[in-house]
Image (cartoon, rainbow, N blue to C red; front, side, top):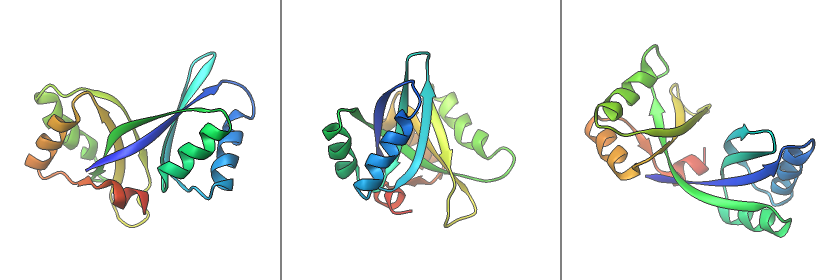
Length: 143
């Protein structure tokens, strides 16, 4: 149920993001979802890709620092309150959202959101209990 996300630390300067995307292109790696957060000096690019090993090898070869993190991909109803229906049961059980981002689901009517929780196992249990669809990593990589 976990999805492996790669994180790349980037200097906050012109062209750095384009450099990463060119490296991934040349390694034939397809980006499925991404999030970019920045500060004055650096940024963290979080990616879900179709081939983590190829992405990591290509980026490290070019001198980038790459980390791996487990996240969850959750199907969220595309309707008013859809996200709240996911968050409420987690909040009531004390599960904290560290960060989240979304991407379009090309094969369905609902959104898919990527979540990093402080306790992934507890979050998985709560979501299963509530009948909320947590998408397998292999399925996310192939969307």
